[in-house]
Amino acid sequence: MFTQDTAYSPAAGSNATTASFTIPFNFPVDITQVAQNITAGYKGTEFATLVIPQGPAKTDVDTRIIHLTFSDVPFQMVSGQQSTFQQFLADVTMSANETFQLSGNANTEASTAVGTLALTDIAFAVDTTIAGLQGLNAAPAVVSSLDVSHGYSDYLLITCDTTLLNPSNLTIGAGDVAFGLVFEGQTVGSADLDGLVIIPGSTNYSTGVHYSPQGDSATTAGEHMLENYIQGVISSTTIQGSSDTTGIDSLKQAMSEVKLQADIPALHQKLITGASLSFPKDIVKTGVAEASFSLSNPFTASIELQTVNASASYGPVYVGGFDHVDLSSSPMFVPGHDNGTSSKLPFDFNMDPLSIIELLETAAQAGGVDLGPLTELFQMVIDDPSFHPNVGFPFHVDVWVC
Image 1 (cartoon, rainbow, N blue to C red):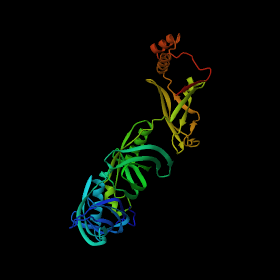
Image 2 (image 1 turned 135 degrees about the vertical axis):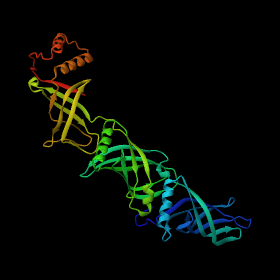
Image 3 (image 1 turned 90 degrees about the vertical axis):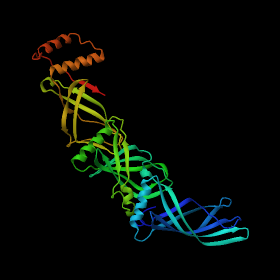
Image 4 (image 1 turned 45 degrees about the vertical axis):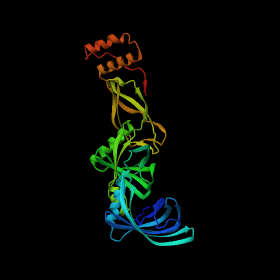
């Protein structure tokens, strides 16, 4: 377990350590207690020590294999070996397997046929291999349970679960980490994991995404990622480590080399659930209808709309729309996990006669409606677009679109 104060002396432990031994005589020996002074070497350099106090051990007498455990023992860096310590941690983090050297001496208590014997200063020097974390890339990172949690002045907090696979049998407490979130080559925020403890196997880790793109290019990429999410499109992102990912000095190199591919799943839920279009009596003169819409908020954070921009089409026909309607004086507010309906907004209706005819004919065909004598009137307008019959709406017409 690493902290900033124990960056080069993290507490270490093992719940399954085995060691084989030989003795120059042929009678059963049951080693019941072991104490060890261990020096770890990597690529020819001694870089850390492990002083394990005397503790219980179990011995397979026939095979002469010792089974022991220990906990909360400092893995203490040898003075001046910061770079080797950092490199060892980085290589274990990124590789499939890593070999290093253990040497030192052990003191034991052994049960024998003639009683308990104390065996001291037993020297050893062995190579040992441990499975590495493979950069947490042994399986794709899986992102799930996204929720827009809260909006702050300088970032948008999006919470999610990230499933990571640790293929080794190592547990590493890395503290608070913050990886860069990259989309379309731009850093659009960070993926923060507080109090990260990487355990063996596939595990879900609570992740807080701080969406905060900086600069025009990053803002454009970030907006595209959010649009993809809302519009049902998966976004392929990169979770990228850097020297700023952790404040723990000994882990900076290891964390900076982590690079994960993660797909941001789509929302698969409509935010706009319905719309209403109302035609006033003077629509022919003004060309302005009234529109409103219903919004369903699937997030924990509330939604406040201050500007609205929309266009409406029916099949191939452009019906109309409104362009950046300013709602700042009376914003549309929808609380988290709630529904709301907008006020009526001015809707610029497409008054082109040929477009209106195409709209009515398309809608009639889709609904199986016979337009009767209107067909001849439509043909007159098609033949002579300058023909303007005296028509108007004597009443309001409401059209609901879902």
